[in-house]
Image (tube, rainbow, N blue to C red; front, top):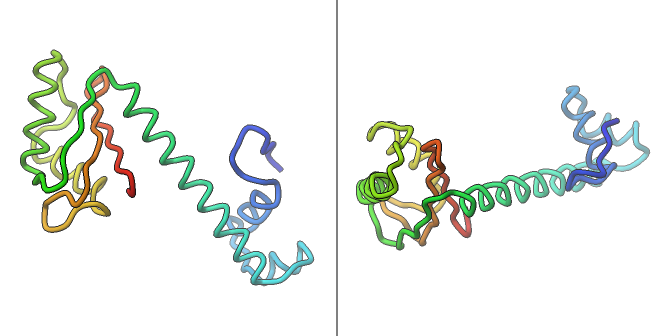
Length: 141
């Protein structure tokens, strides 16, 4: 088993995830580990929640470390977000690594949970890295 000391996962969570990745059912994992299906399910959910929290932490840090950072208000449409990103990049002398249609699609993929009908439902923080990568952090995203 992998060493979990440098991760946000417990040893038990890694045991369950490894077995599930091998294609074993929750019942099979439960039998191997001497526990119940319900417990395996709970461990798996907790592991996935830890993975998501780690992913969100990484998103926040990448946004905070970007040389260009700004906040976009709730109620802003995607077209205006794209305009703001390009304007901020131009001001900083950075080339955005997406053309307009690609950036629009990229943002839509990132912001689907905090947008409705092409408009933000909550504010977001945007970072533009020195390589032109757009990073986005939404509180509930």
